[in-house]
Each structure stands twice: as C-alpha cells, then as structure tokens.
Length: 484
Image (cartoon, rainbow, N blue to C red; front, side, top):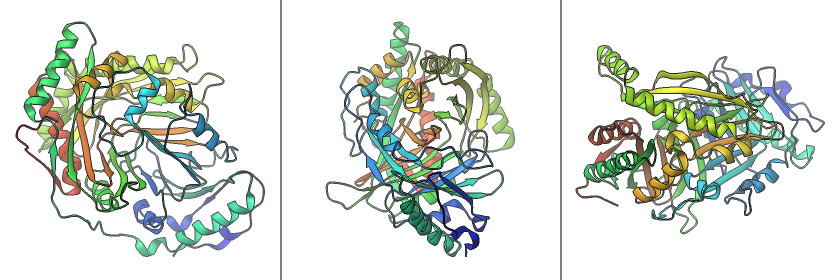
C-alpha cells in the first residue's frame, strides 16, 4: 500500500503542486499504470533503457480535452496553444522535479507534414487515425530513473483550485493501492503468434530502393528514407502488447498511448505501442533545443566477437557515416530557422549506441530558441524529422509520396509532450505498432544513399522488424507477389 500520510493536506494557491511519492519506490511504472487502465486516454512514457536524454518516465490519464485535428489557417497548432493556456504555467523546475508536470501529450502523424509543406498527393490514405491527436492533462506521475524517486505533479485548470484539490485526491486514492497489481502478467487477447504480412515483397522493395538511387544519380537529392508496412488483423486489447514489447525489447523511449475505440463500430481499441530508440526534439527550462538523429544500423551479433565485428563495420562504413552527416545538416538547417544565430552546434557526431536487437550511429544537434519562439514554432520548423525523410528534406518527402503505396500515418511522425511552462520532449515513432481498431501494423524502413545495396536494405528492414515482432509474439510471413 502507498502511504498517504501528509500528502493529504489541503492545498491553496494557483501554483502547480509537485510532491514526492515515496510509496512508489521499487514499483514498475507499467504496474502502477494498471491502476488507471479503466480511465480514457491512458499515457505511459517509459525510459526502459535509462540513459542520455531518457531520464524520466511519465504516467497520466483522463484528459481534460482531446484535439484531433490541426488548426485551419497558417498555424496548425493554434488550437493546441489555446488548450495549453488553460493550465497555470508557473514553473516547477528544480529540486529534482519532473520536467513534464502537466500539459499536452499525444502524437503528430507523418502526414501532418502536408500542412507544413506543399507535397504531391499520390499514396493511398488507408489510415483510420487522425493526423494529430493532442490531449490536455492536468496531472502527471513522474519517475526519475537515476534515483528511483517518484513525484506527483498537478495543475489547476482555468484557475479552478478546488477542482485541482479534488483531482489530486482521486489520483492519490488510486496510487494508494498501486502495489496490489505489481508484477502484472502480459496476458494476450489474441492468438499467438501474430502473422504479419508486408505490403511490399522483396523485389518490390528493392525496386523502390533502386528508384531512390536513380534519383540521386540524376542529382535530385542525396538521400531518402523509404519503408514498407507489416500488418495483421487485430481487434484485441493493445495494453498486453505493450507489456510484452516493453519487457522483450527495452529501449529509451517506450510508450503506450490509448486512443479510444474506433469511431465506426466501436469494437476494436486504438492505441500506439512504441519501442522507439530515437528522440526527436526536446526543449528544456532554459530554452535549449536538442535533437539526436539516428542513421546507420547493424544487427546485434550472436556472440561478443560478432557483435564487435558488426560495430566496427558500422563505425567504419563510409556510406553510413555519410548518411548520418547529411541528416545532421538537415537538422542544423531546421533548428537554424527558430534558434538564435550561431547557437546551433553538433557536440557529438556518429557515436555508437545499441538496443537489444540492433546498433546505430547517433549524432547530437543543439541550439537555443530565439526570444518569442516556442516549442510549437520548433515543431513547425522541423517536422517531420530529417532522419526519417532525407536530404534535401522536401524533395525526399516528394519522392517518398510517389514511391510508397500507402500513407505512413503515425509512423515516422512524433510522440510529443509539451509542458505548460514551455518545455518539450518527443520521440520519432519508429519501432511502433499502430492499433487502429481493425488491424495492427508496423512499418520498417531505412535511409537510402547512392551506396545503398538494395538487397542489403531489405535485410536491414527484416532485422529492424525482428526485435519488436518477436517481443510481442509476432512474425513476418512471406506473401508472394505482395505489392500494395
């Protein structure tokens, strides 16, 4: 049982409340999340592999408002700005408090980029999810993965302090019995294994890679990211899949977003179940922006010797280093649109990072937002991420639209939280399962340069799919002649 004690004292004033939760020490965030599973809009953002840029895990649910469309007009985030303004915006930083202490949380689909750039319309739109879904949350439980400490942060809405007090009591009551569900089982609601079929067979995917190489040879661009979609029928509950994925392939940016029931028949639950290794953009309390693009991948070896050989091969690969460096240049340009002149830096270039199934080259780009700019301006300038589009970015996005047969949906979009005080965290939605109420899908892809070998690029997508599929009890089945 979680000791309540002094935490039940009355609160006054409009400032946000941030208080320690010593009773959560030793409890896994996904076990505590079980106490809120019956509430709509459950969000769990979990640092399953704690490290640089992934110090905090967050839990929240029961949003005050849900936004499922971009705003008309020149600013697609105008409605989101208005929602965020309903929360008190006093700072909560310092004292080890969680950076996200209430605000907006949700996802931006890749195709939101159409609101930001003029693109052709060719790929089929088979998605059942909106291009944007941002929810307003007034409370967050945050875990510091370095210290194990947990905090409850809660903010007043529209200046209503009495409502904040009631909300706090409701959250604390659920947390009081959090230990009763610790160690919950990942019971699946669908027969295993789940058989996923690709929308492109190997020959079709290799033709797509060759088309990118031809465009590069013609001088149209330097690199483009292309992908294929794996899909299976699924109307079960997505939460057990998250528990499997979280424990089977731990990464720095694991996430579960409940998106509610499908609007057409209300049968299947909708959710994003993510095991992304890649952050997108962050903004801290002093307006410093950071991006950590991933480009260059090898599988993990079966033995330590093979693992080291593959790592050395990746670090020595001119193709992979060139691919990474080109994306760094894209991000430097994107950040330069909203950051102070001469503040954009590249403190780390092409370092090696590993997950359970693959190893990557990762770089870091930083800058400082100009006065008068905010996280929404940064998203408008840099979305979608250069690491999953190409260079130059706009030409790469045009080519992606003509080559990939179906729209990407949330894949290669971003999972994002934006705090009431202006801070932001986000991840690129790769290694992400999308449950849309009818099916479960997973996209896999890679960056293509002139040096790319089509068959090797196919093998890379197979390696990227193997970890997340295996974690949930899925497998890729061969569909002869699949092309769409």
